[in-house]
Image (cartoon, rainbow, N blue to C red; front, side, top):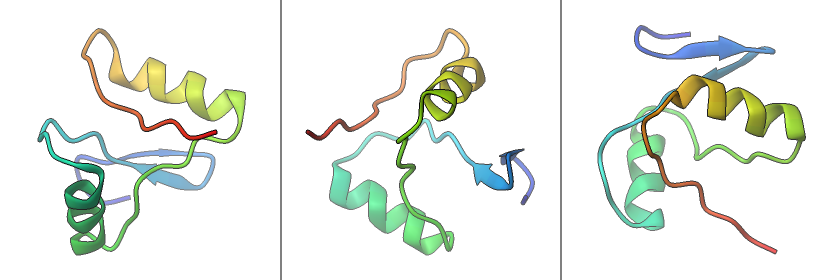
Amino acid sequence: CPDDWVGYRNVCYYLSREEGSWEWSQEQCSSLGASLAVLRRRWELEFVFRLKGNDDYWVGLQR
């Protein structure tokens, strides 16, 4: 994984402190050769919560 990213189960994660719309956030990820995280499994959500610590981050939800 690049500097400032965290690797877990063969996936690299990056938490950004920048605020923006979903579209803007996706563009920022694309510029880094990445995409917004899709948390489909419980372990993914648990990992991201451990990673973020006490800081607040937005996670988009869809049903």
